[in-house]
Length: 73
Image (cartoon, rainbow, N blue to C red; front, side):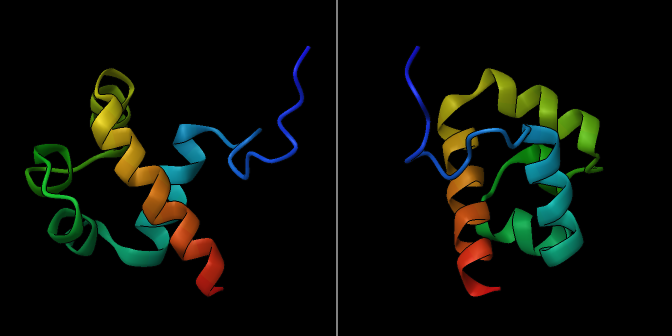
């Protein structure tokens, strides 16, 4: 079994990532930074998770935003 020692997102759920980003930045900033409908049009954790699980490019952008947020703390 491979270890994930070099993966900073290992063990962190997508729900935690989105929830932490919303708490830190808010939906408006997230929608401005990553222009996707689930952040801009009636945003919710549930709709965002559904979209991000199906859309690898959007999930990658959200993960990058999360890692940048962690570095700034």
